[in-house]
Image 1 (tube, rainbow, N blue to C red):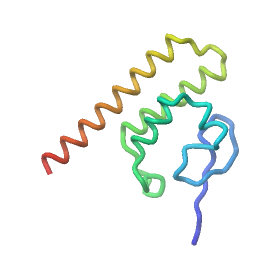
Image 2: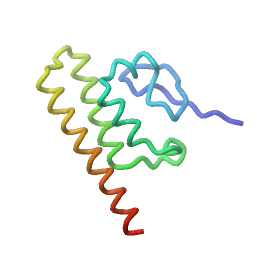
Image 3: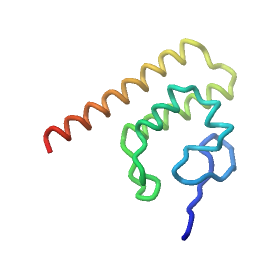
Image 4: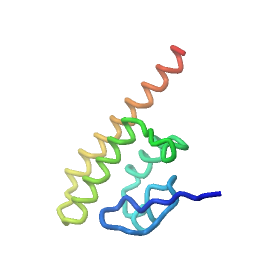
Length: 106
């Protein structure tokens, strides 16, 4: 069996992790819980193999990279984090509503 690997999504981290994980343990737990929760909530098992993450997952991935840049620049303000938390929550809520709508139609 071939185990595919990729590197942690934290900027400049070279640690290899299994494809179903976002990143290495150290960087995963630096992320605030609202980001980690959104990543897990939007993750679809197998998306790393099929290369088909949802639009919502990609939006949260982008928000995560923005957060990392703020964190590394030491300019992570409370206002930024509050606004970002609301943006991520809106992405997740919209995604969940879309999935429920698809289930009720199909």
